[in-house]
Length: 441
Image (cartoon, rainbow, N blue to C red; front, side, top):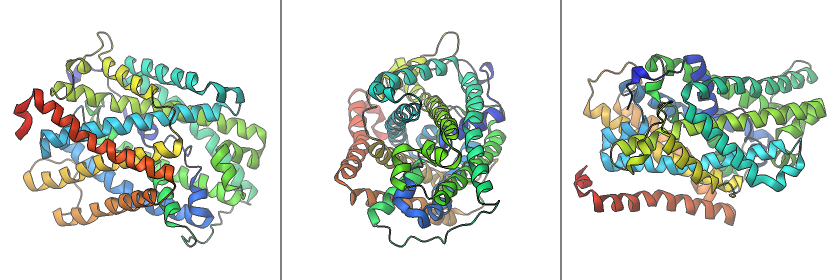
């Protein structure tokens, strides 16, 4: 494997773009929120949920990454803090959740592209496969090309959003009037699905650390880039949801036709076209960025002999884990037939379990190595950390409870997610058969 110094490294401005797409990619995918939470509850959930769900994750990632800025990120942290078995769980769960996550974006790409060419809905699978394998080719070229493409696509995503917001504010005489926030009238199942929608649109802060050795001055770059990306994401989400709320658009129309329908309502057909183009750019950028992060996890797990040896093979010219990228792309190719709502539930449920292991690892390392150098340290003692980290766990359990009490389809998706979590133990038992020395790891 080449040394970290031999790899081409990504710069902070490109890292911001990659983080933006890994976590968000713009407001696309947030459309069902008004249907679930209503006009009075949507903005309230957008303000509260990220504080309880995202902020603890961001600070956890910053502290752990400052201690161990290594390829494999969260997998390496959990393995070091909790042992090989839990490290395997972390890598396995993340691999599964990312397959589900990646399957969402080619489907969304087709939906936005159908605004221009409705016939594409009849060819959804071939178009999805084209997106999957074009992104695989880009990732094989390396992190720098992915960063440059992400920077370009960020502009393509944000420009239509800015136009939409400016036109909406102009139509309202330059004033931002906010409806009184309230969660009254929202059923528990709808509240749970609203949480899932916001949580899904704000997850992935730990994913961006899997290629830390390919980032210039990683500790400082991550700290600056994550803060900028978080502010950017939340401002975009808040303003676009406010525009949808103020426009009076039918909630079902927004859910079914997406933000292009909102663009048509605010500025006419031309703005709908621009918004749809932005949605296509968003899904392409997200897919490429998420594939970049997940492909490094099987590579390092293979290095640790927890997955087949071929997965850590690097491309001769580009020094990228091309076998891992190809395997990931093959699996995603078979998952594009799930519905968006089902994928969302599975995605967030499996992701939340892996994130919980990172929180436990943070606390464990505070106890195990209190004097270890931490260029970034959360200004709380261990008890304070435990109390704060209960917040995302509570949000997670409320969302899961809402899914289990929702529609039969949502219940099936939640049950599938639980099965996916349990599969880590099955896979671990299979590994122990050939590697019994890991039993005490």
